[in-house]
Image 1 (cartoon, rainbow, N blue to C red):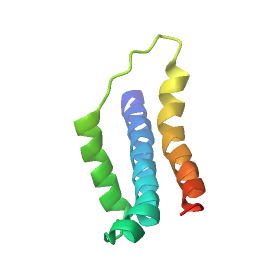
Image 2 (tube, helix red, strand yellow):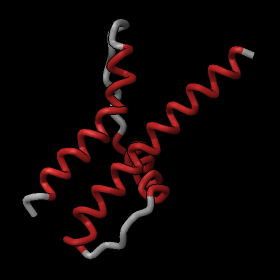
Image 3 (cartoon, rainbow, N blue to C red):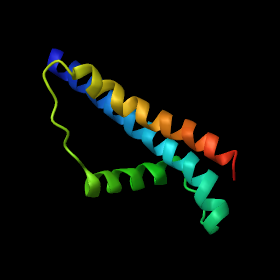
Length: 94
């Protein structure tokens, strides 16, 4: 029973982080690709799919020490948020 609950929690966290990356990509796409290249906007589902494909093609394994588990949790959460924050600043200059 504890294994099932743990698997559900891990799946929810990974799914949430995946959707966060999709949201960040859809926002950045709408800010930059739509006006510059006249590309159609991406929904969060489409952006999540693109993000997953790109992640599979460009995956990089970063070796971690045993005491860096906090980094393994915060890095995937902060990267999309920082990307949107930097994109928002850049958008102000376009």
